[in-house]
Image (cartoon, helix red, strand yellow):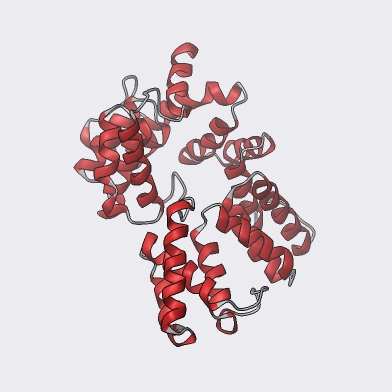
Length: 326
């Protein structure tokens, strides 16, 4: 193991918002736009906005540049490898895990400073902070130990992160239980336990958990409460929830029984028009195309003016892709 003080330095770099470098206002604004584009699945547009922050030493921007190149080309590329390597050198454990996945040390002689296992480097960069009680670091260890194929440690750290109040881990815990983890006497108790974790994450303000909780409540025909959580998820920037709200207002007969409030075609069109402009969502566009004749030309003009007002003040929409997904 590397000395504890070195691991803590790496962890401090990792978990600080800007990875130890204060970005000037212009660079930070560009990074924010790059992350908005990445999170909205407009990844091909993100690199020019992320690169200034990465060049300034921001490990998060480096990592997401690596992710962008890898995902766009459906595999490791030279560009992705270079950005992952730079992020890893700044203590980013997920970049280390990507380097391991891509065989960087074995195939390309891109190895950590000590040893030849990028997974071990990720563990050594993260474990000291997790053991000191940092919930975010505990959540990272879920992926680190999963890469080692150690299910007991993997789930143990996810449980610890969840109990410590890490909302994303609570959301993952809900998924894990819902998908079959743990021994429950019947499916009703399993669903109840999973819903409990989703609710805890939702109450901490995690929009994907709000959206998931809303869906589960709808399945149980608790439509009023489901609608409330759908609104909260939308207000938190969850793209799917925002589309469902707009769809319900615009064409509730088509959307179905998840809709609670009365039809408001102007509000619905405004929501979907704003989503379409911000994210280029095909779903939003398709709903609008099918519902075009529900509005007069005057109503559409009114709705699109309202959408422009919302776009100027609403938080950016996101699909909330996992930091370490496929």
